[in-house]
Image (cartoon, rainbow, N blue to C red):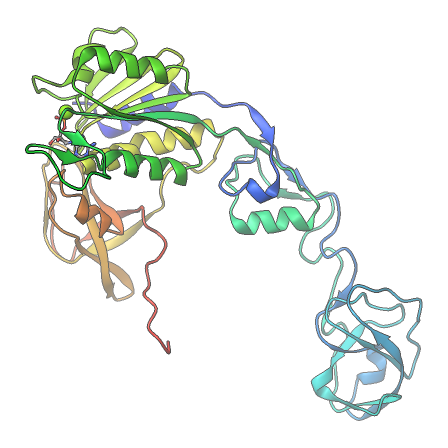
Length: 409
Ligand code: AMP
Ligand code: MG
């Protein structure tokens, strides 16, 4: 058996980088920057007021009780030639540029005014409620590095500095199929005897969406060598070609029948559970990933091999899921020969540290337990058991939606 780390190195070292393109920020969520972004200008571009209030000279408001002459009114979006002199104030709205002469803003809450005069009830320090030019981003600074995967917040920052079409790596084109004579489309209402619905394809399609890939659905392929060769052929000009099923030891494991002996494809036994059998190599122009058939095995091999590879070809710097240390809420007994991915959910905190419990049955066909999990508890090869109360490493695959909303809280 190949250790996980070795298998992942082989996979990741054999996939290259995709070309680059420019895309509108409107469509760039999840895309990866292919070049550094340097700020062409300051953000904010000019000093401006952080509050609705009065722009004044600090010396005039050093002690409470000053009365100043109001020169006028400055809303956001306009500029003014007015210069604020000693004993003077300009009414100003949040975001409006600071007028010359003024260096401080008094909040409207701290004033009373009749329109022509304003009385300031408090002492205000110099610079209060003024946002300086470049206080967020300074012109010529490195804003985001190549390899950054763009979140909604990154897109907002790109917008503020006028980068409307960031340069990113192309999306990988991924053709995928399910294999198996027993499979019916998920849409069928009544199953023939011996049949099951294909759960892998909808899951794989969604996993591909999440990682920014463009997916090409090759459908359900029966356990027939000719049909499989045909489907492999149709997917062979994609960047990646993914199949599920047919890679283990059964008599009808058609992927193995068709591709074993092909010098460009290796059939591996990886020292992980689930997802021990795995095929990897090249079919035509495509990086070929032959995932196992059981749905939880599909999830694990996608997470451990395909997802990092799809992020790597997109130039992403961070390609693995975040890990954190948790406490096992119950004994986790596992096969010591393998790295085991136990499906767990966070069941509260022990002295501030997340405590995890198994989210259901741990057989590789029990997908509902993976759907109810927040993370894999990763039990390393050689360990065999994690006792209740001991530390365990979590690999978070459902990082969001971890806190339920309770009305009123
Ligand atoms: P295989 O490796 O092809 O023998 O598949 C292993 C197990 O996974 C069998 O019980 C299959 O029925 C099941 N399986 C294979 N493909 C799928 C699929 N697309 N959806 C649900 N179960 C599947
Ligand atoms: Mg099969």
